[in-house]
Image (cartoon, rainbow, N blue to C red; front, side):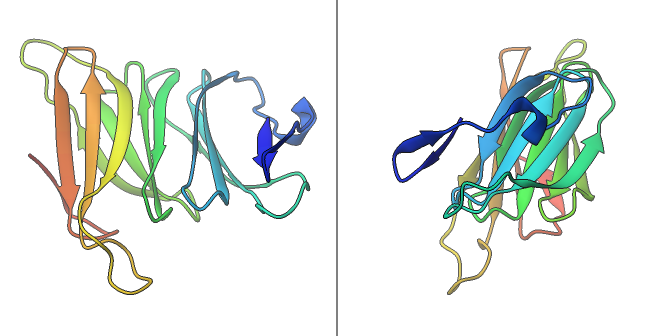
Amino acid sequence: TATRAHAPLTWPASALPTRDGAPTCLAIAPSGDLLVCGCDDGCVRGWLVDPKSVDVPACIFTVSLQGGAVTAVSVSPDGLLVAAATLHGGDVTVLDASSGRTAAQLPIEAGLGSASALSLAFIASQQPAANGPPACYVLAIGCSDGHIHEYTASGVDGPWTAD
């Protein structure tokens, strides 16, 4: 279900095909123009949504990740980046939201053994310049080992560093 001016809109299942994978997580860009879906087949799909239209969204990327079902997706505050995690992947993948191109792989450092990312959240750490991207990206990663890991990047192209 999508919302337009507080009225729900339901797209038919065929409108947002996820092939063989059932949706496991969703995220919407703050602007409302990007819908991201993580699926149990390991795919992340992005759809361009026109907030003023009831038309079926256009799929702009499909990315297959290693590590099983996608457990979490998050869209950066400016809508330029998407983060995705899989159940057994060991890394969080940061994607370019316009193309699905991999921008970074962020390893999850577990104390003793392996950990999986279960939740993701981008944090707007600094105000952007006039109509520009934020001065800094921060990504919080909630993991199965009970820890919250944090990565920062100085811009869309990184580099990303663990904090």
